[in-house]
Length: 172
Image 1 (cartoon, rainbow, N blue to C red):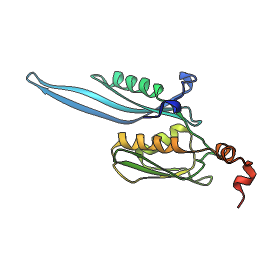
Image 2: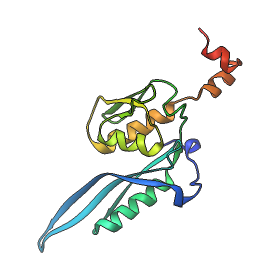
Image 3: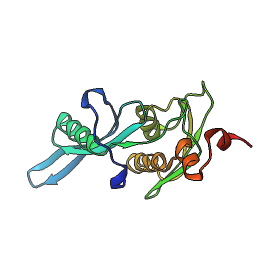
Image 4: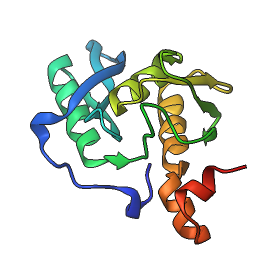
């Protein structure tokens, strides 16, 4: 998941939106027959550069979703958004899941596949081009997308680190 210093405390649980990425029904075969259980992958975010994901397992779908949302709220991370898009192109990786996200001009929308689309939309990105290049497993794609978002650097941080002004950063 996210590195400890990148995690943030949930500001207000009521303002977080949630979206289901995957719901899985699994069966455990016992001598008494099959026992069904559910596993859910949920994404939560405030639509303003904060996103988190979580997984929950339970015998009931509603409990399963509630557990996943609670887990997601514990793992919120912040990333920079610049004019409705991301500041720069970035790759992310988790396991066999690899993703590429690129900034896009106004009016483009979120051009991304299922699991990536959920993370980017809930995080508040309005214009982005994204491509899943490795595994299509939703768990790995979500984690790779969050990894890519965590690697993003805001122009303010870059300018401060280089000791120059923002105007000078965008020259040339």
